[in-house]
Amino acid sequence: MSMVNLISFEDLSDNRGGLVSYEESRNIPFPIKRVYCIYNVGSDVARGSHAHKELQQVAVCIQGSCTMLLDNGREKESIVLSSPYVGVYIGRNVWRVMKNFSKDCVLVVLASKLYDESDYIRTYDKFLNELKVGQDEER
Ligand code: TYD
Image (cartoon, helix red, strand yellow):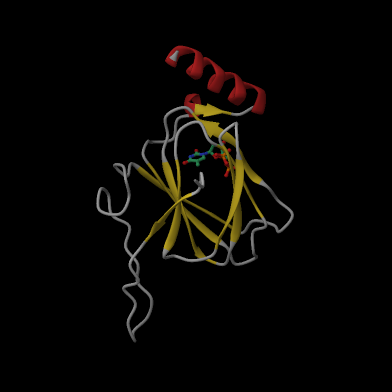
C-alpha cells in the first residue's frame, strides 16, 4: 500500500471561474488551526526537511506545481502536487521535503495546530531516533 495519502476535493468551478473548498471534518481530517502559504520559491530551492511530533497537515498546490517527498523512516515516496482538487495528507512523524517548485507555485498548507517550534524535528538523525523510541514504547 502506498504511504501517500491523497485527498480529493470537489471541483465547484462553473463558467464564472474556479472554486474549491477545504472544510474541517468534511474533507480535512482534523480541526484546522492554521493555514500558511508557500510561494515565490526558486526552482533550485528545497524546503521542509523536517518532521513533526504531533502536527497533521494537508498540502494543496492551488497554482503551479511542486514535488513533495515523504519518508516514514521505512519507505520514501514522492508525489507531484499540481491541482487545487488534490491534497496530500501528512501525518505525525513523517519527514518531508518540498522541491521542484514552479515559478508560479502557490502551496497552501492546512495545519492541525498553531505554529510551535517545539513540535518540529529538524534533523534526520533525531527523526529516526524518535521513530525508534516510539516503536520501543509500543513493544
Ligand atoms: P519552516 O517551517 O522551517 O519552513 P519550510 O518547512 O517551508 O522550509 O518555517 C520557516 C520559518 O517560518 C521558521 O522560522 C518558522 C516560521 N514559521 C512561522 O512562524 N509560522 C508558520 O506557520 C510556519 C510554517 C513557519
